[in-house]
Length: 191
Image 1 (cartoon, rainbow, N blue to C red):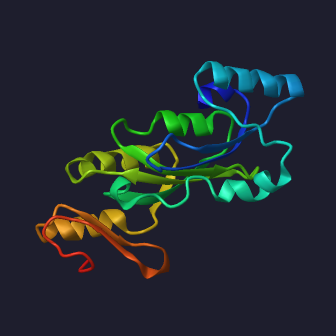
Image 2 (image 1 turned 180 degrees about the vertical axis):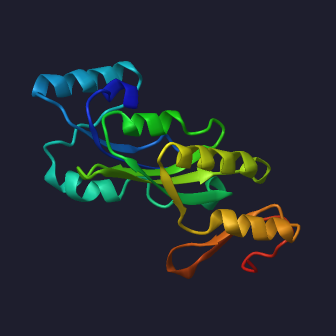
């Protein structure tokens, strides 16, 4: 999808896994009405359904916050929520996306360009227990390239604790103090 837009700037991108076809809120900088139409045509030609909301102020202001809604729990097992920050420059977001490791499902994605020196991306990634060491290597790779990251819910730390206690699982506290457990060997709510 991004390659249909590049080299134009993506100003915002939001997605949340839902089980159906993905709904993605995507904003980009077009140089003219013709340039915008060229991108829309390219996206359609690539098989994406497009709804142009550029003239709908309500959708632009509030719709971006509603994309995807609440994800079904069965689709977010072993999900960690990570914040990434990297120098904002042309192609930086594309580079970030192209370097996401294959095989880790992206279950949430939020990027909004603010014209700052640093780009900030919130990403939900499903990291199976047997691939966590590979994921740690990926995080180290990002740091070596000038990216910083934060495990916002303590997913990796909590996964290590559970592994030390013999449970192949992930557990973390979510919004409003809810506890989500995806585990083998622990009772729900005992995380």
